Image (tube, rainbow, N blue to C red; front, side, top):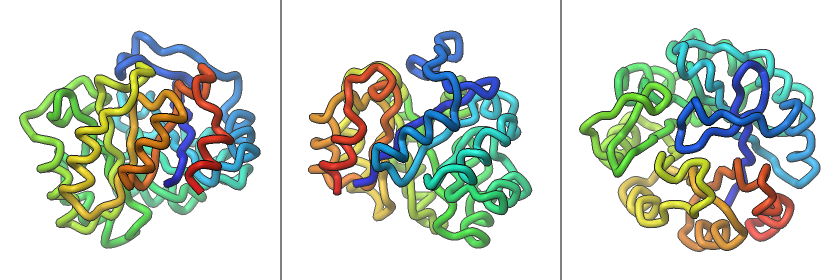
Length: 237
C-alpha cells in the first residue's frame, strides 16, 4: 500500500481543514517545499496535494507551489483542486505533475473524464467525496443524490484506474477511516482505491493495508504527530 502524505494549499501555504470546512483552515507548516522534502526523507515516493483556492475558484490558483514540489523533490505529485478543463490537465502534466485528480467534474462533466483518460491514461484519477454515502462537489459545499459506488462504477466504465475516496465526515477529525465504505467501494469496482479522511494511527494504516487498499492519504495525523510517517511507509512495503 502506498502512503500519500498530504499538503493542502491556501494562499501558497500548507493548511488543514476540519470536515472540509474552509472556515476551520489552520496553517500547519511554513513552507510546502520544505515540508515535501521532509516527506521524501521519511521514505515516501508520492505526495497528495490539493489546491483549496482552486476548488473554490474552479480554476488553478497555486500552480507554482505544486510545480516546484514536482520539480525540486524526488516525490511524484498527485494533484486535485480547480482542475476543470483539458487545458488545465495538459498544463500540469507537462510541468511534471504525475497524476491529476478530477473531482467535481466527474459528476458534472463525465465526458471530460473520458476524454482525459483517453489522452493521459493512468495519469488521471478521480476523487469521490461523500457525505453519508452521497457525493458532494465544489469544495464539498454542494450535495447530490448520487451514491458513491454508483459514481465509482461510472468512472470505471470510462477507463479510470484510480479513485481517491473521502468520507467528508471523517476528514481532519483523527477519528479513524470509514472502513465499511472503503471496503464497499473496493469491492464495487476494480479500480485502485486510495483511502482519505480520518487516518490517525499506525493501527489505521495496518487496517487499510489488510483490507487491500491501494493507498492511504495521511494529513492531520502527520502534523499532529499521531502517526509516524516513516513507520507507516515501512509497514506498507
